View 1: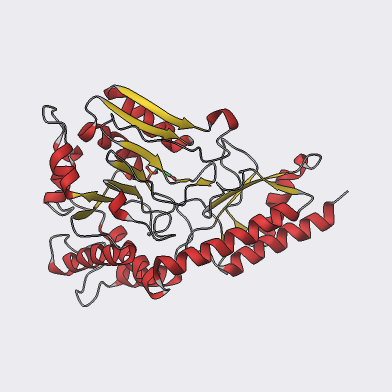
View 2 (view 1 turned 120 degrees about the vertical axis):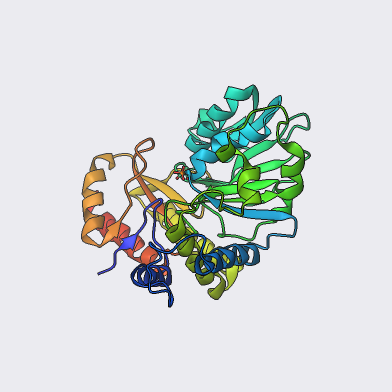
Length: 359
Ligand code: PLP
């Protein structure tokens, strides 16, 4: 029996992705080979790659003048590639938690990093307001904070190139890509299986902003991968196939507008329950509450029931609810493939547990 999966990533994927990847692992089209065996230089795989890129452009409305590439190394590799390629004198970052902190650490190796806003003093429980300085090489934000459960819901206007880590909310709402010099992220939440990273990069930005006199290793240069359309080295083939399948599903479901509607519905159901409950409480302040990752805690007097609730959810076929080790408590990750039925199962479990344990 399939579980109600609330994992933070890797996470629940659409049934059609699982079915079609499984089929392709056994036999990839009429090639007589598995997708695990076929050459990345073959026309059959090239067609998969081209479709993945075309679907991504269509689904997200990526305008002319942008390149899409799929790389290895995770979003974490982007944390170092960004400053390696674009950091000249100074960059600006917003600090919204673990992942932006990791990105900032890499940038600091190259010089002055201006933290234009941070919610650290308040446990990263809200998305801070920020002003983008005009004297920096680029500005970096993390649109959705997977661990802390905060999210920004608009595309900022920036006087300098704007770079965004959209690992955990890509394709969950319409995005004005033209506002960004670069958008990147791990694919393992809304786009497919773990093991592949997406980069959407403005071609003019790339042509004009790479640090001229720096020796950048070939594999760490964006230009290498853009010029070779992700085929400079062997790309993660099966993962790209999974991304193509997931984007096909997003399109068939009604695109990012439909994804946004469902995301709001799922998050509202859980947040309404957290507001109502006498046993569980939300962590994140209103206005910043992520639709993708919802951390929650037991209210005062009930904290000792944490393990019992986790065991109870397991008995209800719910997995992935344990909070991140740095935050504790619980977290429900409700990415695109998470269904209303999954959320109903979670809310029902919370209510049943509350009824059984309320003092
Ligand atoms: N950025 C965000 C927002 C994330 O959620 C994650 C991982 O969950 C990362 C970056 C790191 O991604 P990766 O594990 O692909 O390096």
